[in-house]
Image (cartoon, rainbow, N blue to C red; front, side, top):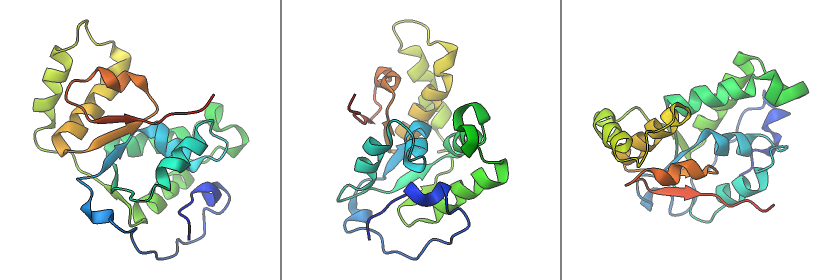
Length: 175
């Protein structure tokens, strides 16, 4: 069965069926920390980057995928934003249920903050050629989290490429 999140918005009450982890699942590094833009594109069929997110999700050897507190909170918040979601807006309970269904998948987990995340964060801020704009504070934190946890960061966002030492994969989208 192909891994697919397309129907989650329509069938939120359906329990996920038990599945085996893909072949090679546990042999791939520590895994990937997905930026919220990737989680959102996976969950929302109408998202402009849904196809690119699905290509990533359906790769032959999908590594372990991680949420952290920031990406979990962001996904729930965005799914419950009327301006973003329009008629498909969810209440907080429904949006949190989507997150809970995701972390029940064998490929997905929740990762606590590594003990030395703050130690990694400061140099990421200090090594910028110009002061980091406040709008990139959360990006800097996610970069520090990924570096300190030994994870790749998966995103559609070019801004992560500025962080030295971050193993970042920017998913490509077709225009």
